[in-house]
Length: 183
Image (cartoon, rainbow, N blue to C red; front, side, top):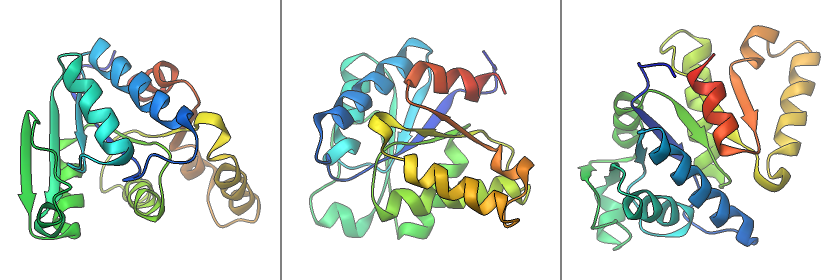
């Protein structure tokens, strides 16, 4: 395992999704993180897949750092039992702090916010702003259409092959962590 990786930022939904498979995947990823002594960095919420993965990492004795904007704390969706919780001004500050605290990134199933965070980290990697690994946990084929689209964009000359290769993909949490820790 790459000794440089101590924490993984996980982007995922504030909803649980239509299938129980997504929550199962969150718990499986939590187990894989704790197994490898990797701390979780995430959006700080107690709802949806965010709450599931944070609760499971904590239950297994792992370390969890949440980063949440004041606006979301005020809506009472902030997790109150984390190892560390940072309350920040806004979403821009949240994303920057999560990136700073993390040695790698994984997107699980989620909505527009998850997509935006994933693509920002991929873009930063492409531009050389960071050299941290980025992964996609494709549980139940959730991201199949996105993966196909990225292949299409590559084939049409909008994404260079070396940049397309920056995104590591697996439907198995342990296998994805292997890809991130052994590039």
